[in-house]
Image (tube, rainbow, N blue to C red; front, side, top):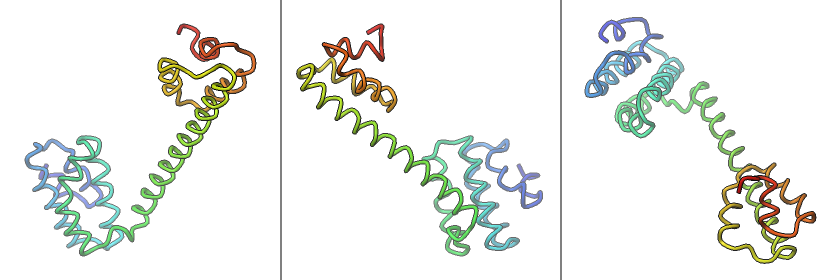
Length: 168
């Protein structure tokens, strides 16, 4: 681990995921931060610190990473301002876009499920709890749309649901 901490700046992000016990990771992070403050530009420090956190995510849970870097990040961020980093901004933008896309997909599936319940109630009668549970388990928008298209071709909820799950 000492070799990694003494190596070039580009190797520093590997230090917390190298052969170091979890109890020593806070000291490793402090050593990294000291070098970043001393030897880098703000852009370099932000990029290297972001890389350190990302690599730590391969070894530790998100909660553990946050817990371990919180104090050190505050020290670096107070001096450097990672939010200004183009690397940080790119990572944040990708995460934001992914979250937005997932949220939109869930919203469209929920709208399709509600339409299915509304139209199905008129055509097939009120669904019982078993049917509602099976419908709630379908998160796939395409699967819900198949059910909506087949609504006029079936005479029961069971017949409709057999379209997407023939074994049920």
